[in-house]
Image (cartoon, rainbow, N blue to C red):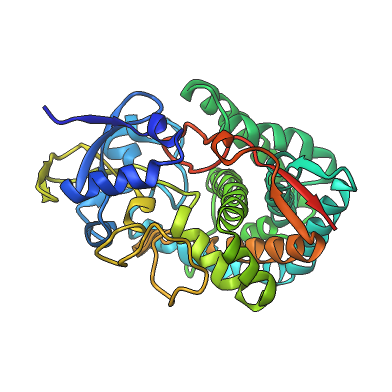
Length: 392
């Protein structure tokens, strides 16, 4: 009988990546248990990940082929859970909106949000950087990007928290339903009074045939942008800070040469990416891969953190080195569903690290390293909290 790994239980440990490396050396694909207790094939190795992420025999349209594997059953989620040609058609429209002036001019606002949050830390000397900074920072950026009114941001924050830290699938789905409903109302308001934001851009965007995205598709996009764009950046920032502090020689190198911040972000993505796994895909037919047979209708996902620590790709995958020669990673996936928000995530991380290191001459963990707690999640790699001691 094939062993079934409880990924959330494993992720609650600091040694997750080393254990995945051990598993990957004997098995290219393993069976894992998800939050809702359903089992799925999970791909570990880099070569197999790159091969299968672009394999048309794996469908993202779980709503049609395996409804039990959907993020939110009963709701078609645009782009993440679509196949071509519909996916390609919608992606072109959304890609154009991501290149709009509303997105290009967001950088000064990201800097402003970052500085305001760091100002809020004051002179206390210690703080949980997740609660005080890495959680609110990307959430405010997403709200700016979508044009969420200031008076609506408190419930928006609550839905984000309920979705990212839900104790059960049912609680997550309930919060998602409320979020989808709110987004429908927001879209209606922007149809009447458009503003300079991504959602307004998408409302007026048109396909070649003159048609537009439906309210349901727009709402799906807005909700997924919040869920995917907020949680992943929150934990990317926290993981990057944690790993820089755990490797003081790397932090010192970055302080000496701030131009290395881009390389530091890329190494943080490779070393301990926050988007640990992809969304579920479903096999359209039987597939022989990694020494196993994936049967038609079975769920498949990709453990990106395992692929990025593959010894066949780099000889020292468990070392954190911001000066490492540029090497491809799959922290944002690859193939047709390569993350559309990757540029924004990199931008947020680069600004955040730059501002933090300029602001604080001293930055260190406020608890012993072995007391740092990791999230018991089967999808997100992150910390429960990040208590830091800091000084100007």
